[in-house]
Image 1 (cartoon, one colour):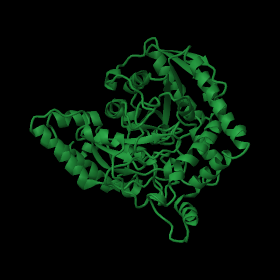
Image 2 (cartoon, one colour):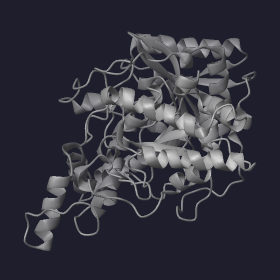
Image 3 (spheres, rainbow, N blue to C red):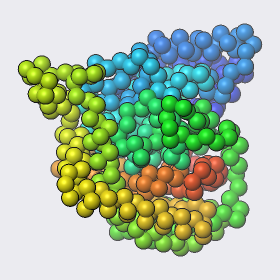
Image 4 (cartoon, rainbow, N blue to C red):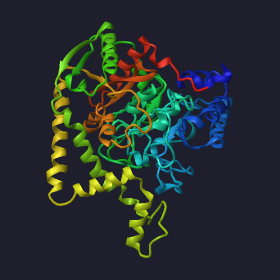
Length: 488
């Protein structure tokens, strides 16, 4: 097993490191060797950090050798999405705009992983500035789905999901604005969790749409997800929206128990855009939970059908503000083809941003002008309120809501390049959790044509533990999460 440590979960590796069955250095070397072997095909990483990773692992081994207590993530290799600032390590957001940007500080989540003793294997690929659902919008390269290299891994956290699925790290961090943790987790057959808005600090994470963004873990199983949450959740004075709540141990939620659980099933989550095999797998998962003591009930989410439209407007407007800082003045690249400051800024943005980002910025700026602000942006915010009320009412009748994570399994690279509306529908099942600010998790529940299907479990505000318990119960009853792609 020593030569295939990379196949193990984070919690299995943690037990072995702390009992001194293996060294953290050996574990890290196993993952680095795996990256060397398969990442030329998967292309999950923009930057790898082998020397720093081995140094971090050695520090863990030294601490254990001195008899010091170390945390559960100590010595566990993880990837970090490349829109999360990491001190001294290139952070590009997969954009030409930041090809030369090396942060002088760590994002809070990166610092917390460091403090927990985790080992950073590198920075993972994404759609440029997290704008996309396939990782095809990266200015670096397209990441490939480990289950079928002709397929996309999802996005925008496609590099993180592909790295975990391909055993190139034990866990990874992603960011989720409309499903960008859960959707690629579904496509790659791993676990992806979007916590309640405000549980995890976004300080040092390049924001896309501030009222929607949330950092979340992508892991091999639900137990690993709880371990990573323990390390990254918590109040941060540097992020004003983080919640000041009592510290929790999320691993305590890992009980195989759904007796009395009320499952909400909304017809709006199973519309004609849902592939028949995906729906069959998800409804089969609901039956599994019912067989374990849960019950199901039809609920109504009447305004859910407007979610994608409302999100598209809100995200465009917020992005036009958050990305205004990239002007060639303070950091990042600067155009050399302009004589004055105004033209320099225009040229920098023209040359530095990719097409998908430009489209979003143009739309967002337009929506902030004149009557468009009231006609579209304010109306989108009102629809958001109606969706929030729909979920509040639904949760009076149920404890969780189950749906597909995605309408389909992963699609072929280039299939939707000329059809942005079809691409946007990849987030049709996930966007509501961001609009409402509630937790949501994706776990594997089946396959179609050799590609994974994701089961999405969505819960009440700050009821993240219930999601982990339900996901863990389902996972322990099935074996979908144990299947692995064959890359070599």
